[in-house]
Image 1 (tube, rainbow, N blue to C red):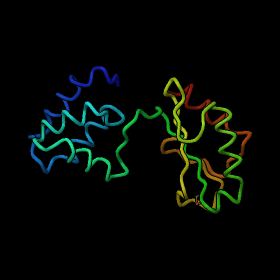
Image 2: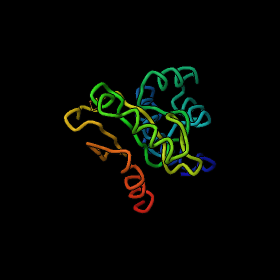
Image 3: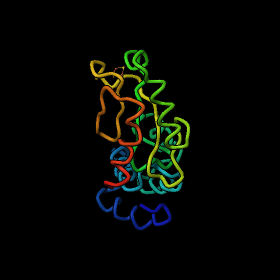
Amino acid sequence: MCVENFEVSLNEVFSRFKGRREELIPVLQAAQAAFGYLPVEVMKEIAGFISVPESQVYGVATFYAQFYFSRRGKHTVKVCLGTACHVKGGGRLMEAFERELGVECGCVIPDYQFGLERVNCVGACAIAPVVMVGEDVYGHMESNRVKEVLDKYEKGS
Ligand code: FES
């Protein structure tokens, strides 16, 4: 969704709520679902809608790990660097994704197709090393499959 059009989309988000204080988190969630993250301008508008200070909106939003404050990739690649995955070559996998995507961990590629992140165990240690793309899990992942995995998402959506 285009951030420049946030006012139109925010009106649609706000139309689903009454503007009560207790709706702050659901409104933040709905706004993030609409924009993919929470731009500063959007949080200011939410503060006005809910009738709370902007500082309270920022305080609540920054408290929860579910909220993001910069634009994310359409697909988020998460390379597991927990102990089991690290031992089985998670670090080399991360390097392979960084090479293939041309960005470092924590960054989004220029066309916003992919973002690259690290995680510390996704609970699938038995199939380490593990990589996730969105909700898809790739176990026993190898560096020579990195391009093949990324291609699925570039062509598929
Ligand atoms: S350490 Fe990677 S899934 Fe557990």
